[in-house]
Each structure stands twice: as C-alpha cells, then as structure tokens.
Image 1 (cartoon, rainbow, N blue to C red):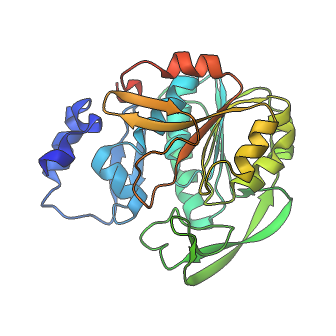
Image 2 (cartoon, rainbow, N blue to C red):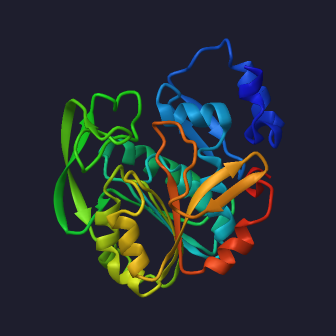
Length: 302
C-alpha cells in the first residue's frame, strides 16, 4: 500500500491522496464524481478500468496528460480522436481556454452519451473552457459505416471496443466477440477542412490508428497538425510511424520519471505493464518539444 501511494499524482495533490485513503474500505460505487486538477468535473463509473484509474489517481496516464498540457497554448485548436467519456477533451478545453476549440470523436453510442453530457456540463459550468464539439462517429480512411466490435473484456474496460475486431492488443490474440455495432466513419481531412492549425491531436482508437492517419493525410502532409499523440500497438517502426515519418514528423516515445515526463527515441525500450501500449509523440516542431517538455515537474497537477 505505502509504495503504491508514493506517486506524483498524490504528492503534488495531497487532497487526492486523502480521497484515496478515505475510499480504501468503502468499496467501488456504481457511479461517482471526480474533479480533475484543472477544475472540470466528470461523472465516472469506478467499476470500469478507465474510471477506476480516475477515481484513484485523479488523472489518466500522467506523462501523456503532461505532454499535451505543455504543448497546447491558450487559443489553440485541439482534436481528441477516440475520446471515450472525454478526459482528454476536458484537459484540452481547460488548457486552450475560452478562445480555443476542441473537437472530440467517439463512435460508441453509449460512451458518446457520457461524452456529450460532460461537454454540455462544461459549457454551462462558468469555467473559462473551450467549447467541445462532440461527434458520434469514428475517424477512419473512408466515409461510410463500419462495425465496432465489443469483446468479452468490454464490461470491465469500455475503452476496448475496436474497429479492428475483438482482439487483445497486448498479446494480439483474438477475444470472444460479444456484440457488433454499426457506426459511422468519417475522414478527418473532410471533417476539419475548414480548421486552420491544430495544436495537438490525440488518437487512441485500439489499433485503428493507421486508418485515422490515412484519412488525415492532407492535414498531416500540410503540417496543419503540429503535434500528434497516439498509442502504437505494433512494434516500432510500424506502418503508422513510417507514414508519419514520410510526412515530415519527428517521433518520440513518451515515458516518465518521478520528476516529470521523459521523451526518448521511439524504438527505445521502456518497462510498461503488458496491457499498456507505448504512447508516441509525432511533431513538426522537435526543437520546441525538447525545450518545452525537457524540464522537470508536473504542471498539469498544479
């Protein structure tokens, strides 16, 4: 227990540590409310893996959150692809402020309703947040419809629905399909054609990342997406990282020390839990990334 509590998520936010300790013997409620370090609140279901992480730590994937926070500036446009219930959408909305804009894409109809409720609640919260344009569709390389697969893992982790089939992405082994849902697919080149420069795009789509990038090839080739944060389920180099490299992006792997985020070459090995794929950063501005992300500390927790 004591080693598990020696985390920056608790030491930088003692109030979160107090909440964590107070919940040790309380069990997991069906629903609960969390307030994130940047002030927005979210309704979560702590029996789901993503929500339980928020319930315990108050943030998700701290180094990824930190990198996104540091690379965005007030007034920027940000895009959250595979938004789930809106954690990163809310972080982006707080960081870019009322002068900015956030686009959020989530294809699963039930999860989208949670995302939409959060976006609407933030809009009337009185906080200086960017508006979140929540869209119920999947980003891909074609306009049409596709099947979204739920595996037998979905009831305990609602972030596992995938357009790539019912697969355990950690082991690349098939899982039992419980349900298939017909969803709409869109190309980001079409969706964001009228948008200027995009500060950060975050992509987490359970193995469908390459199709997302193909559908955003025009935006990427034109340098209109300055920074791209994404999960890579395959070994690097991969088709996705090769495509980004060919379009002028420099890649880093996002890691962490106790004292702050760490950016390393994408093929460098990190010790990660078997269920957690590496998060990569592709950027048009590698010198700025090294400068902005090279200092110690966790600004996102302050």
